[in-house]
Amino acid sequence: MAPRKKKVQEAADIAAVAVTIAIAGVNDADEVEARRRQFVAEEQRQRHTMDAIDGTQRDSKADEGPPPSLLTVILDTNPVAWNALSSTLSLPNAISKLLVFINAHLAINHANQIAVIASHTNTASWLYPTPNAPSKRHQNGTPKDAGDANKYRPFWAVEQQVRYNLTKLMDSTKDEDLENTESTQIAGALTMALAYINKQTILSRPPGLEAHMVNIGESKDDPHKKSSATLLSRILVLSVSSDLSDQYIQVMNGIFAAQRLQIPMDVMKLSGSTVFLQQASDATGGIYLDPQSSALKGGAGFLQYLMMAYLPDVTARQLLVRPGKGEVDFRAACFCHRNVIDLGYVCSVCLSIFCSPTVLIDSTCLTCGTQLSLPANYNVTPATIQRAKKKKKKLGDAGVGTPMTGATTPAR
Image (cartoon, rainbow, N blue to C red; front, side, top):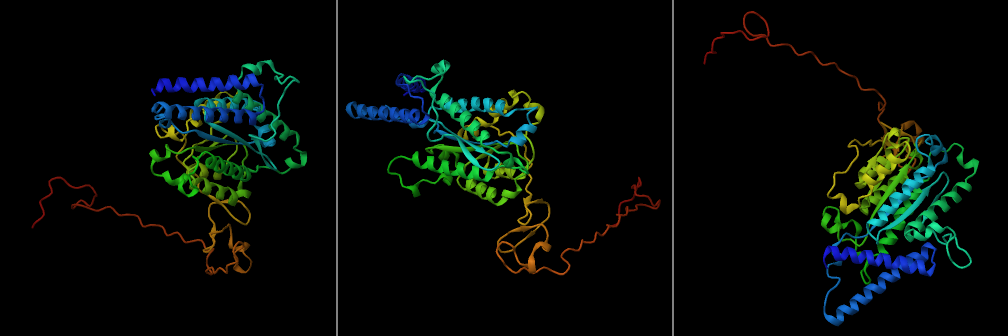
């Protein structure tokens, strides 16, 4: 099948699904997704039946295109941090621009998937997809908003659920939850994202394929094998909080899991500073951007960063130059006080990091309980010996360092 005919066929399939759903009056997101998958499965069955009848292969080149992509967005919803950023970029404005970016991701490939997780001050919750999604209907089953009739159903479902669940999350936040809170539950949100990606990867496998035969990370050094995967996944973190050192161990475990599964972690730091998200982006091969606040004012710059830097999937990035800075801050946090340190003491058994040996009770590791031995002068500052100045070599009888003209040839 020619590429042009293939694109026309895909557009016709999407239009047919949209018309079928609109006629049926389906507004629930789960029902929309179920109808879409049922329609695609029925169409594939009919094509295989026709292939068996006339001996042709209509889907012989259907697998040559890029595989579907799953984008999981982790949105930092810390109200305190967003309030400090409101003069530059407000949370409602950021949500509107984020929905435009999500629609662009879904429009690239009709099989693309999206998930949105809120990293809040005291919890990590799903914004999309969610069970029992709200639906606005009249008694006859038609939507309340007349403008929704002309909106593509997947776009409408994502927008409705994200806005509804975010409003519900903000309304349930109490004043006590905001006291002395500088960070959000990014570790829990990252764990939920990895679990969801693993589930969707298993569901996307062809029937009869054993679990041990498919390894997400098997194509680490071969981009051609990566393009043949059934589902390409990546994580996008939109962060506004500064301090994540109290979740150092949990975040690093999530980073190592994403690195093992070859899931890139893209990070867009809107405000504050944290070294762990920068390390996550570097370790997993993602994109880390820390734009200036002046570039985000009004929201137009925020959308441009999303579209230009984070819209290409793993397959497209093989042909592009990745943006971002090359320097990475590899500092770690101590296990005793959760502070980011430049110089620390490491347990030789469990590799726990401590800011000072004085926190160890009887020189015992606080993590594994190993008895550690330290030299008596471990905290002595090394002496600095000043180097002797290099003397100039004197040449000739004049006693100066410049070679004299007309010097004779040395005797053999």
